[in-house]
Length: 116
Image 1: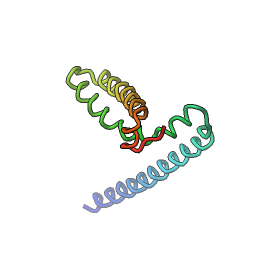
Image 2: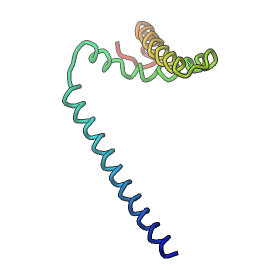
Image 3: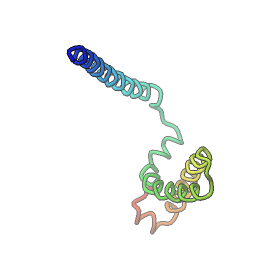
Image 4: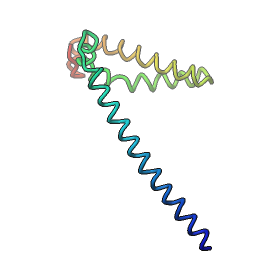
């Protein structure tokens, strides 16, 4: 019994040390990703200007298209990789088509609060 509690304490100490090291490592990776993003992703061009202007509209419409694309992808195929690619591509394409159509119609653009 004494031997069992001794090993249980050692294992629990190692578990706590492992968890603390894991959290420190995870936090370091998050900070490193932020630093790399600030260093290498801080630029502006036509695409970033367009995306910053259209981010609200894209955020507004993407969920509906992802759900619709997932519904049909799951019905039509059993291949998981094909389903994921199909959902990703259809979601992106239909979201931007939907956004571009809605910003060209003034009444709908006003209703959704979209910028042109």
